[in-house]
Amino acid sequence: CYCQTYEPCKLLEQIKHVLPSCFWYSPAHPSVMQHNFISNRINRIIKAKIQIYTIL
Image 1 (cartoon, rainbow, N blue to C red):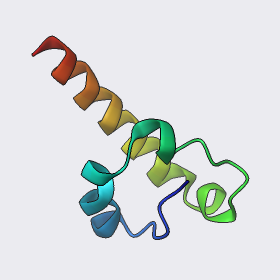
Image 2 (cartoon, rainbow, N blue to C red):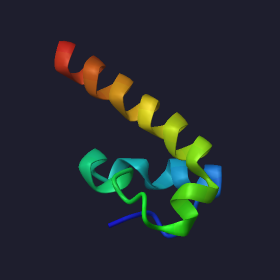
Image 3 (spheres, one colour):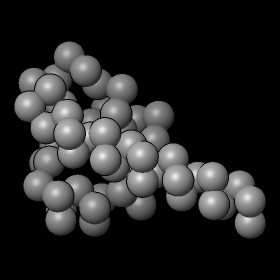
Image 4 (tube, helix red, strand yellow):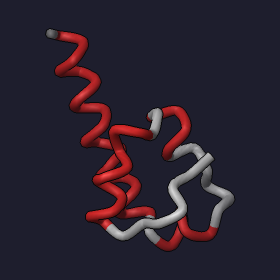
């Protein structure tokens, strides 16, 4: 289970439809390795939002 496109704007559009557990745990997929820096950035964004929602 992974995003089919890693263009930042399209990826950001898909964040709200993608569960964190489904998003960045696909290291075997070539696109994940090629665009790992984007995945890490989105990873941190989602974790930050999860923390905010947990506080709220």
